[in-house]
Amino acid sequence: MKRAFAALILTGLLGAPAAAQQNPLATARELYASARYDEALLVLNGMRPAANGGSGDLKAIEQYRSLCLLALGRGEEAEAAIAAVVAADPLYQPSESEASPRVRSAFSDVRQRQLPEIARTRYAHAKASYDRKDYAAAAGQFRDVLRLIDDPDMGGRLSDLRTVAAGFLDLSVAAAAPPPAPKTDPPPPATPVYSTGHIFSADDPQVVPPVPTRQEVPRVPSAITSQTREKGLLEVIIDEQGRVIGLDLRVRLHPVFDTQLLNAARNWRYRPASLNGKPVRYRKLVQITVAR
Image (cartoon, rainbow, N blue to C red; front, top):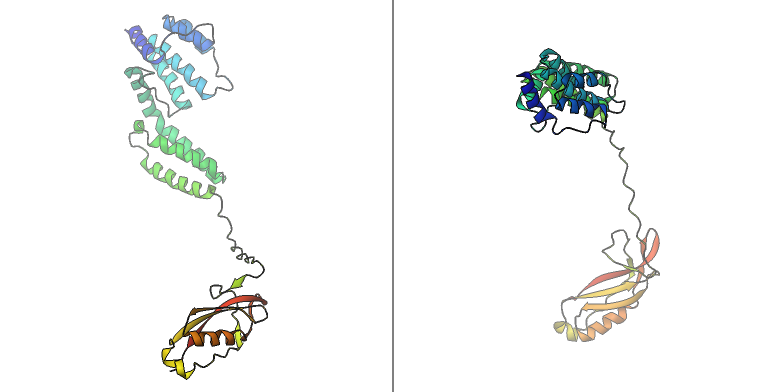
């Protein structure tokens, strides 16, 4: 009966036999497949995990050892082998493709007994890392503790320890985070580079506008006063010396008066506009109002 049960386990966990000559673990596997359990156990007992294999090799060895022991009817020793697998990798559980329901049940029984103590031990290691101010390591260890406590085989035990571990995880993550970069004042805006002869206007608030020193508007001849528009708009371009070098009558008033106004505006003078204390050209709009 025990051998039939072991064969059932083998079908789920081991799969097809491997070539015996490849390595000792493959040899033990083939011996087990041939129902030579004592010989397979001798091979497994003589094996040690490879230096670069770590818990992975130990887990594989103890898995096969537990199968051999179950086949030989040595249930207590088989449970000890499963316990070694759980101790090496407490989060490991054989899947449906790896093991039969009975083997998975045996693993679950052992895990239910071992997980609380493993979780407490790992919490102690995580807390020691935190106390050493090794916050990055502590954060990873506290996450492992929470995964163990949340495992279904834990059955909701150690809820108080979970609360404490979650709190220390938050503290570890916060302490491990790099400090915020120091605040620096933004660099001053770059001064625009203008080409020679650039004409500024009221759209350039950084420019000091020109100030009129002579800006007389001629009187409208009385003969055309009634025919003249009440308001006009004249654009003047003032150079770096304060002279008018361009005129554009945007809103005309009367053909006769328009000519008089343009002739007078050519002689207007200004204290020139300036940018950072340097005279610049400027486009100025002058509203002309006709007195009635």
